[in-house]
Image (cartoon, rainbow, N blue to C red):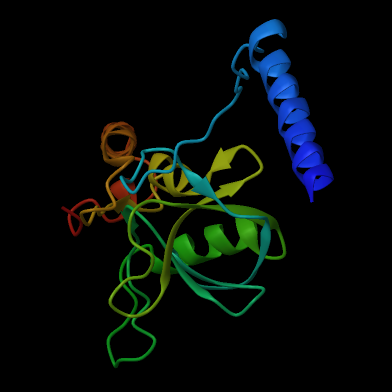
Length: 185
């Protein structure tokens, strides 16, 4: 029995010596340097969220397309004249030209999508900005006079850019601003 106590006492002494050496004689290491820390946040940022490239399968009108995954997408911040295909009304001025322009630009092309704030509109269409390579398609449509500005809060990130482009297109009488000037406000 005495040997057990001596063995336990010996082990306690050894553990104490190792602990003493570790914490007193061996200098402590500096705290680790953490690089590129990511702090999670619940506050929305103004950083754009881009998606992997998709392909445009069909153009419904000048501001709505169907993607290769059958998602209906509405371009944010712009409005083009209506085709009125589901009603007895005739197409609005420049509607066909806006649709044809967008179709020639995007059909079977790989595009990148960028989200603003909202996911979808009241009709369930995905709301996104579209990029074709380095071309910001939403803005290009306004600059060329194929669309006019229509911003619906909270999706207003590029509102000022759109308004500036629209003023320039109006001043230069481009697209619908030359052919439909009296019918478009």
